[in-house]
Length: 524
RNA sequence: GCUCCAGUGGAGUAGCGGCCAAACUCACGGCCCUCUCACGGCCGAGCCCCCGGUUCGAAUCCGGGCUGGAGCACCA
Image (cartoon, rainbow, N blue to C red; front, side):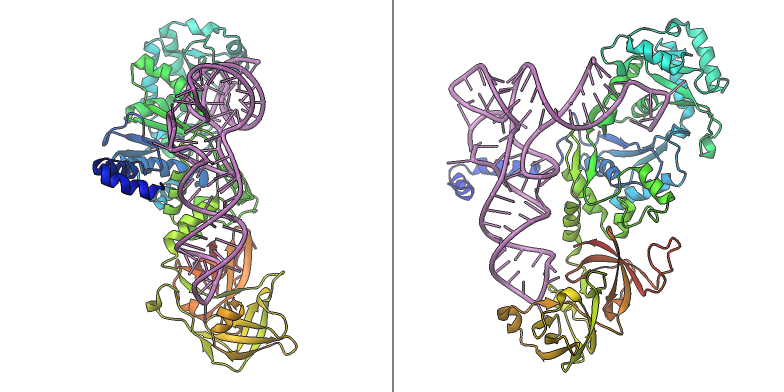
């Protein structure tokens, strides 16, 4: 019995049970597993980006999954910028808005946006409370010395200080009276904890470099992520935390603080890193930033960059990215994301609306060749979309035309110019002799169908791809289209129209200023 | 070294004791459709890390390996 037969049989025997089964199948259709202890309307989650640059593809996973969960549970999505290190993870002032734009493009809107650097007094207050509870102490051990003590599960001499002294020293830290490295505030955990990563970790340290945000430029005593984020998660009512495996120990560290305050720790899920195929560039904000500064990439939206902005400029919809991210699920191991699945998602979204046009590419190893068409009509009229005849046709003037060299048949053989008719190639005369428009040549005689453009009226077009720029000639009808439109260049792929009569690129990579059109290649 | 976590076809996910000689999406190969190498349809190849144990029965439970990842920062 196969599945269909079984179902039929079950419908006869126990229709109720069948309904149940089908209902299960529908509710189980979520790509993401249910959140533990989640109730509708009660879920609060946050994305906590470090604003050090626009987002790369890996970052898309957090808002995609959180946004999807927030929608599923009718919950809340907080975006909190964890910008508490003005020095080694120095925030980029443009990145705050850039990240919010990237989230919007993915199709989500945070219910609340916070900046940790606005909340310093809150952290100080909680530090003082923690000191009162005996949960923190000021420590002037040099980092290396403490590290050694910690490795041996030995307390440092500062651990037993009285609360008064700790308050005084912490106040002096806040006032900036120490130099960086001179004094820190540690959370008193368990100096003999079997996991050395959890022993008396640093909650506040001193940084002389002013924060780039004017509002926060005067602060010198900065909280570490585990303290800041732990306090904020509780204060903002976060119920479910999702974070990377690099922060596996964070929850365990933060629990010590939560225990002192008698707070309940949120549910935590971890996941691995996302790696992308298809790109030569390493996926990290700092690497991309360096490549841009070195001129290897022209910007965050360079088609060769694995960034959200780059995919956006290529005409890939946020939804296609979100779907791919959600399909990755919640596993804790590292995952490879195949760009082809993003492309497949996007193709499904745009195929129906994208009209078809011709582009003859002109590459070094496959140049455009110019040929006269002898005889035949003045123009071809291929449809705008094969599935939508009602959209009509475009007009592609014949006469002298361009073909991609690899599309030429052998001398004396036939080829079908799509939307025009059958021609015979004469290599000596560099001509295509028009025969007829009898489609049986294609259907029954194996004549191949190729795309072509007129040599004169076509648009000089730059096609920008992940693998570099390609020159080409787009058929005249493309001139009537608008920037931002998605079209398919037949037998080439889907592209986004980026600009007509582009300015020359200052870097030398990109448009020269001679082109009529720049397009960005999305995918096949 | 110490401490955590994970291992299902090429990629991702599902299955969590018998319905699994394992399902779905993408990729790949072939065929059909087609005036596109798009869309659509059909077919195909290919997977339970290893070894023990529990059990009538294990991809599923237990133990031990192996492999991979992460933390042990005054980074996030």
